[in-house]
Amino acid sequence: MPPTSLSSPGASASSSTAAESLRNSRILASKLYLDVPASKVPLVYSSSYNIAFFGIEKLFKLLPVNGVNDFDIVDLLAVCCVQLVLFEMLAMNDLKDLKDASVVEGCKRTILHPFDSSKWGRICQFLVKEGYLVMNKTVEPLEASEEDLLVVHSETYLSSLKSSLTVATITELAPVAMLPNCILQKKVLHPFRMQVGGSIVAAKLAKERGWAINIGGGFHHCSAEKGGGFCAYADISLCIHFAFVRLNITRVMIIDLDAHQGNGHEIDFSNDSVFLPLSICSSA
Figure 1 (cartoon, one colour):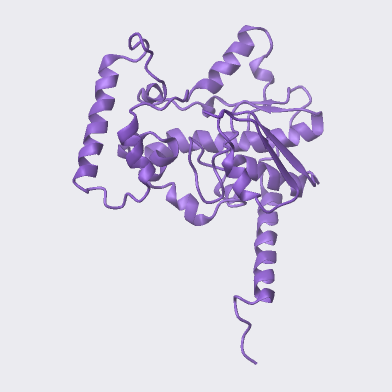
Figure 2: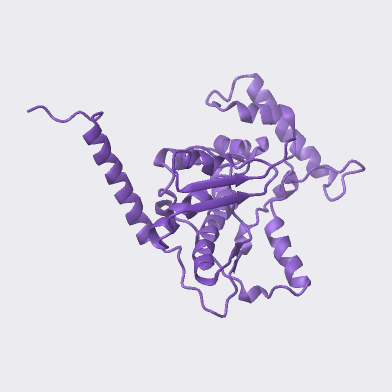
C-alpha cells in the first residue's frame, strides 16, 4: 500500500493536530504566567520597555514646526548623513538583499518616525507624580523566550529579525538598517520581548483580579509571519492563545482605539469564530 500523500485530508488533519499539540505544550511550559502577590497592583511595567540608546530615541520624535527643540542640530546632521549613505547604497544597488520596498519608501519619505520610543516610562512617571501609582507595587514581567514566541511565530519569521534591514522595515526607521543586529537585539527587540511578556501576564491578572493593564505592548500591526508599524511580535495573538490554554477562555473581543486599524491579530484569527475584533480608527 503506498504511503499517504502529505496533501491528503488525513495527513493535513494529522499535521494540524501535531502543530496544535506542540503549541499547547509550549504554552504549558512557559514561565510567563507569574504568580503575582496580592500586594501588587495589576499594572505591568518594566523600565526595559523603553527604547533609548546612542540618542536614537530622538529619531522617533517629529521635529516641531518652530525649531528643533530637544533635537540637537548635531544629532540631526548625523541622522541625515546616515540617510544619505543609505540613499547612496540603494542607488548603487549595494543592498542587493533588500526585498521589502517599505524600507526604500521609508528612506524617501522621512527621516524621523512619529513615535515616542520612551513613552512607557513617562506614563509611569506621570502616574507616580500625580499620586496614582507607587512604582514598587507594579508587576515586573519576564521576557518572552523564543519558545514562547514560537507559539505564534514561525522559526523563519524569528530568524528574519536577525537582519537589521528587517528591523528597519518593522520600525519604519531607515537608519536602523545601518546598525549591527546585535545592538538591535539588545536595545530594540529585547524591549519588545519584555512587553510581550507583560501583555501575557496582564491577561492572567485580568482573569484573576477583574482588570489589568500592561503599560506596553498592544503590537496590533504584527501577525504571525509579518511585523510592521513598530510592532515586531504579535503579543495580542500570543495573549489569546495563552488564555485559551491556561485560562479556559473560549471567546475573545478586542476593542482597538488606536489611530490605525489593528491588522495583525485580524490576519491571525481571520477565520476563527471565537475572535471578535472592534477597531475604532482614524479615517485619515
